[in-house]
Length: 240
Image 1: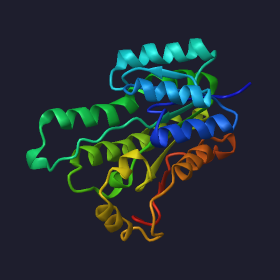
Image 2: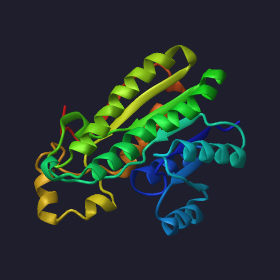
Image 3: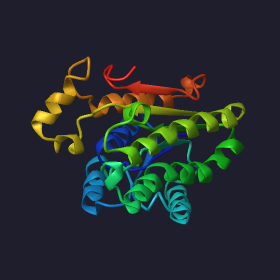
């Protein structure tokens, strides 16, 4: 029987790449999204991966969404990739409470919501793979991203704690911390700023979505059962 994987924010960018990589590897994949209906419909039509819309920052929405996935695909969720995230960049002395709360809610609270709802069934079945997408800026911080960096750093602590709680139950919990990756978001960065960023990356380029997706695939594999509580940095040497 195929393992079932659920990817939050799974219809575009890194999440879309992860969904497609898991699908190509033979997993049964569900891709969550909240906004961008047209993008999600196009993604589903092109890949054949079913998409499901709900707000991952809302616990009850997650509960209904996960139930819908399980009823639609059959069975339970074996692999959870917490990828959903947003940015609301601003220097802290100008940041409003709404932008702080929104980023923390979507980027960090969502990880609790999804894990809290899915991990009981993983414990019952004595198997699970949870992969949380953090960021190089959760490791080193970034100007104008106190909200984002705090959320992504919080994911790392959460990952390590849950890994300890789950290790005896056949569940691994790991984090991937990407550096700058070529996505629609980074393509919007002005050329001169992108070139400046590249000078800080020893390999001299941005990462590729496939490189992050391949790291997730590695952690999702049943043969990776001795890796838990780890943070895999995929940043081209930008931060060691």
